[in-house]
Amino acid sequence: MSILENFYIISLIKVAIVAFILLTTLAYLQWIERKVIAHVQLRVGPYRVGPHGLLQPLADVVKLITKEGLMPSHVNKLFYLLAPFVAVTLALISIAVIPFGPEISIGPVRTWMQLTDLRIGVLFVLAVSSIGVYGVALGGWASNNKYSLLGGLRSSAQMISYELPLGLAVAAPLLLANTLSFREMVNYQSGYWLGFIPRWNVIPEILGFIVFMIAGFAETNRVPFDLPEAENELVAGFHTEYSSMTFAAFFMAEYANMVTVTAVATLLFLGGWQPLFPEPYSDVIPILVFLLGGLVSLYHGMNPARRKDKFTLPAAGLVFLGIAAIFALSVVAPPLQDTLKPILLALFWFCGKILVLLFIFIWVRATLPRFRYDQLMRFAWTGLFPLSMVNLLVTSLVVALTSK
Amino acid sequence: MTALIFIIFAGIAVFCGINLVVQTHPIASALSLIGVMGSLAVLYLQLGGEFIAAAQVIVYAGAIMVLFVFVIMLLNAGAEATTFQVSRFVKYFGVLLLAAFLGLISFIIQGALPKTEGVVFGAYTGTALDVGRKLFTSYLLPFEVTSILILIAIVGAIVLARKEI
Image (cartoon, rainbow over all chains, first blue to last red; front, top):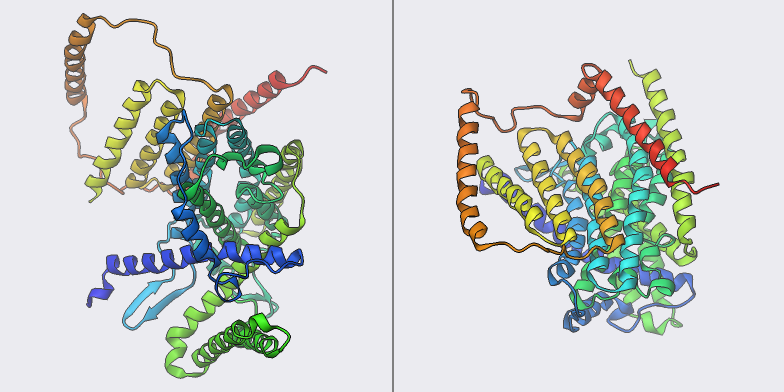
């Protein structure tokens, strides 16, 4: 019984790792978003700070910290400062119940790649996200600004409306798997139909998945549902009066909510860390992906016309090749097969699915225009809500007929 | 450990409850009510009623109170205006009377409590499965009656909110 087998020590280590990775991801998600939107619009995006603009998030953080935190006149200080705190805390807390992979063993320690498994994990995420409205609503109200107030009101009305189709869309896979725990949800989705079609919920629940993603866009206040911060109507909506770190808190909350929504979509509909292909192929796919990425980067890096990237692209290529080598080693070398392989494979598939969904979020932002407010409300109540209701009814009928 | 958590969250619940009455601003009162509901959810969780705890947060703190806050913000209600003057007599004797009243109440409750074992933390199962099974077997009639009541309320709300045709 070494000190490392203590529950509290393991939990502390896991919390530290997850918090570090999550916060870094949030910072770089914004960089990725700017880059992707730039490339969609045929620009290059952030390019000046660091190689290929890679240090841009760091520069942004330094800029936001050193800015003056303004306090508007005649505001209630407590509510004004409480709002960003509530928003960011509730946005970050959901990660505690998200499982990243199966049970693993490192040396003598056996642990789950998850901070904690609640029996009501899905409900926990729903509860936290429903409380998350207060950050936005309170921030809009406490700013003592009519634009902020309108943004806060719009946001609370929108989030209440879209929580209904979201909750109903979540209920359908819960019925199929007959559990509220994320871990059992993913275990339910293991295996393959006919040997090659993954048994993910997205196949029987394609309607629910689409409704969930659309409602997820509205819940995170993203384009095309970003009415609370519509800049041509409301300046910047609920965070007009916020500056410096309080603004950064709202900003971070938005990206953390995006990560939570995509992670929940992955776990409920896309099979969590279950690979897309059956056993022997699922081991090879990550190697091939990183090998291909590395070779493409090297090829473009060697191109003399790309003077600005003559260092970054080859370096990135070598990093990709190194990751491919690590994956290959974990598959081939016998001592690593039991320890490293489950970790790497689960992380690859889970993070891969989340990144694909995040890319869709960014892609939509770069392409779609914004709804009008009455369109937004009509879409929720007359479009999504009946659709998710029908989906739930059909699912429950099928479950009732097929279960013993 | 469980006793410590209980004391902390019971304390928060009582503090928020008092704050709810004392505060003059409606938003502050509404936020205190959310605090009461959140800490009650923690207490349910401690007893083992995890589904009830989640439902408490989702329904009360996440839906009903959002509507409260929404309406308060929409009407832009300001701080409550106090029109009456409190006399010095009331101020000093009120405290004594309140203390006497609280003492009396606690004495009566102490006497009326059944002399059985106390509550054990986590001894009750309140999973979603248990709640659902009870709801659709033992309490089916109250459940259906409540559903019809809510349906009537929804129809009534639509009739009241409908524009004149």
